[in-house]
Length: 388
Ligand SMILES: *Cc1c(COP(=O)(O)O)cnc(C)c1O
Image (cartoon, rainbow, N blue to C red; front, side):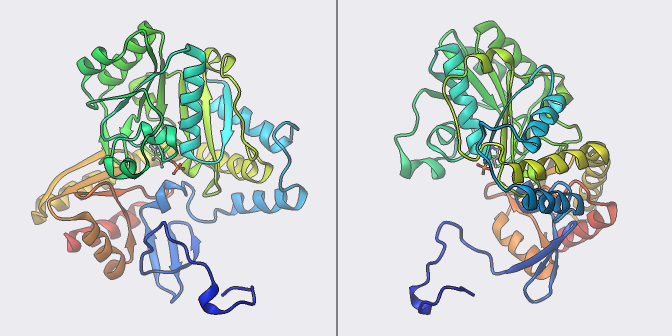
């Protein structure tokens, strides 16, 4: 209902998202409740944005308290919530990535990393991976592989070369003394849930170091505990020069961060954003990060992720479900099917009250809130067994 007093046919309508036939009214934990009272298990975590579940009380309280005190102040005035967030992110970052840039989305975090790398190296070329996804602004989109996302908007930012994901030899050929940065997701999300091997990430580290280029890990989907470690790069023991995070960092409020090594930050050039680290979002992020660490959600994600993987693989084998592969890490799971993923997702949602995500046409993607329990996994595996 609009509170504006205008005729029905004069009201605007959204046009970018193709909306699903389910209106959502509220959320709690791993569940969303629809307008008609139907309860859904949210195994997509609404694009991996609710690591602590929907409306986690500690985050809601932090938002209420901050809202009553100060909604917004420009980024050049220090404010406790933002200062605290800089501190926490630096402390949680892998290696020595202590310099923190705050923004409002994943694409902006990558856009910033791209700018910082060009500025610090004085070079133009960016190497990114086929099937990679880094966002939709003109810079981040230039590093995003899928033609469907790019074609209508070209020309994008130039200077990006794509290599096969996982092929260290091809990467070695592409990275040279004109390369500003290599951008990689440690597990490709949107591109089909494709984990990189530790060897590949090590090779990327050595090649960029030798070439004087920045290694940037896009951990927007893999980070904050999802893969069973706080950052997915920890599994391989590789520390990049910059790491980007976003999605669930503030439990669904718009945010993103670029964590940088000193050499990138010191020559970052001129960059900015009005809403960078606004107090309301920062308060939500602080409470979210506290929850992830205090409840050891990376450890929980590893344990429940293993359980999910085992139960799913067992069901696939037992019932001969026509699944090509179950893959992923922790609570980032891809199920490669033979038939179209969208039809299956629709069936899951409308007939089994389970929400999940696609990753391309043939992969179902599960990214549940990190607080899921084995009982939720059992329900989802049963639903998937029926749908498949
Ligand atoms: C979602 C995502 C992005 C883009 O984030 P937005 O907040 O939608 O701009 C970039 N990279 C990866 C790996 C993502 O999953």
